[in-house]
Image (cartoon, rainbow, N blue to C red; front, side, top):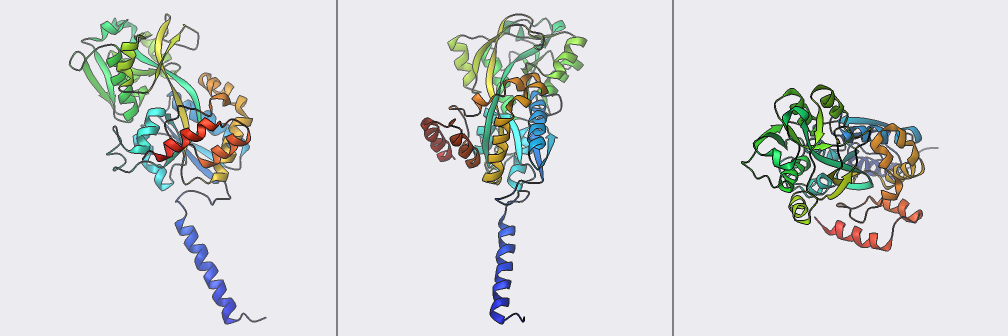
Amino acid sequence: MRTTPSARHRSLAARAALVAALAAAPLGFASAQDMPKVMNLATHGVGSVLNAAGIGLAKVIGTHLDTQVKVMPSAGPTQWLPQIATGEVHMGVLNNYDALHGRLADAGYEKALAGKGAPILLLTSGTRNWLGPLASAESGVKSCADLKGKRVVSRYTGSAGITAQGAAMMANCGVKTGEFKEVAVAGGPDKGIQAVMDGSADVAASAAVGMGIIAELDAKKGARFVALDPSPEAWARFREHFPASPRKLEPAKARVGVVEPLYVAEYPFYLVAGEGLSETAAYRIVKVLWEKNEELFPLHARLRDWVKERFVDEEATIPYHPGAVKFYKEVGAWSPKMDEVQAKLLARR
């Protein structure tokens, strides 16, 4: 049967429409119906809590979905957030501060993102991180007062959020610029601890309880977290720089460096995705993490706290992905208040 001119015209038009649709699709993302065959999940560097969390999340997602999830360690969100827009990175694990200011391209993200906010949306809120200044035992630093005059890693070029944490720690302790010797490192919190270990610093202003590298410091020089001041006045100074709350910790086997009861800062980690990730893919990822939640727990001590009861967070700093919202509504985890939260976050640009 011969093809008529009108049929050929329709065929060419259909092909042209398909080519146009493919060209318009975000680079690196699958169509609205498909899961990407390979997904890149970005984290901080190897040895960080965020990298360990990313490895665990990637394992559970990849095991139960028809996709390969590759974990990409990096210097921090300032490195990988620009790759969200191009589709080179599909998902990432970061804190609430970096998510907010990366999306808005402000507060230290202006240069890295060329003034254009990273198109990220929230899939799940997760583990609450515990953070405090970390000193070597031989430094003699045991309290906030001891920080004065010491070499403190307080600037981290890989993450504006961790730099903000450093400023928050020093503000909480009442130690002003000029009263300590500022040390800068290229990378995340692991690089700060490495500086303490190799002797180029006495204290890392920002260290997360549970980081593997803390055990290395403890074996070499002794590790000791410095207690933060939980008073309302001191915490108001902290929150001028970073959104977190005081949390009291007791010493425990997995809490290397916590040698006595002390207050640390607590804030959430997020699993985020690019806006180009299809609603179907986002829905399936969240569904797997919800239904297979307990598979995360044995993968890392801090993943025991990545529980589904925290997936929906009324204090979220960025809006949720539509695919995630759809799933949370289906399982009754999305309250009417979350509609208000989501609307306000979507309106903030």
